[in-house]
Length: 95
Image (cartoon, rainbow, N blue to C red; front, side, top):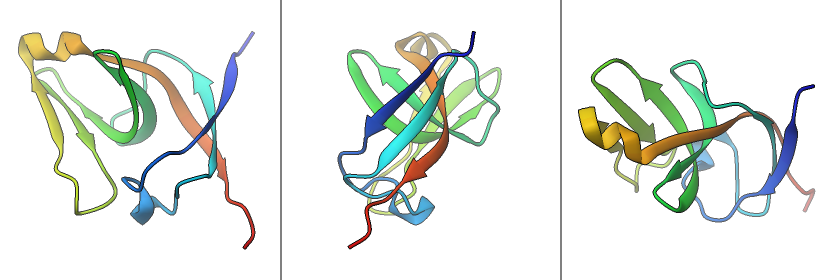
């Protein structure tokens, strides 16, 4: 059975993906995503919503807001990063 979750966005790191503070993000729980997907990721104890780029040598967590720098993890540092789920949809309130 596929597990899903709904999370409320805090912050403005994904505004260029049209995901804003207060939006609801629908997440398919999985520990693997395709490179380039938007995912909920644990870095240590902190959860974050970012676009994830993965290859054998590093993981990049990319914010869709140029104010924020990429978080890049190499080799052993990659063990600090754990994918919780893939964002599959979002809902924004009508203002």
